[in-house]
Length: 183
Image (tube, rainbow, N blue to C red; front, side, top):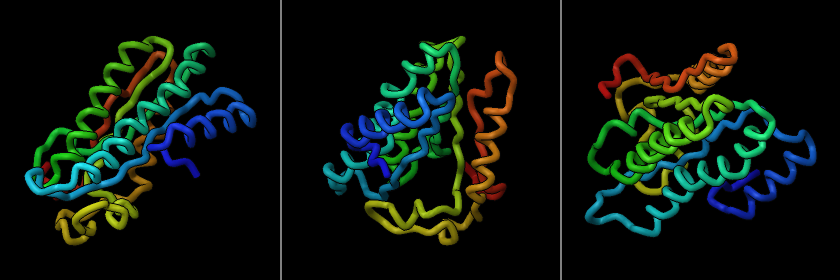
């Protein structure tokens, strides 16, 4: 297991991957935690945990693995974002901010590594995963949000769709959500 908020864990993961399989062709950054707090009352230390996981974790993974892809002459990076990246909502400011920043990182990375490495953002809406059980503050379930939920397999299929394109074709952003979800 790797805690992406820990630079030491990422260093150990990188060393282990290099030792066992060499430079990977694909990097999927999907670690993320939720937080549901009012900005005027929330706990900045909890905010730091979310930023360290959702944003800095992906940046650390990119820094560790993408140079090897560039040296190898090919690779794919997939960043799992959220529809929240484009939608402010009460109590969701910190989570949405990390996902918005992640999408800016993705576009910046795309421009920095083209045409060697393809970069894709997959932005799901409400998804039926353990995400809601691991939210730092506040409590929701996929059911009580009220829009329905997509399955984790639907997100995985979107990732595979992007990865299945021939070299020279990039799918840079995929949004998927329950049909009833308004944002």
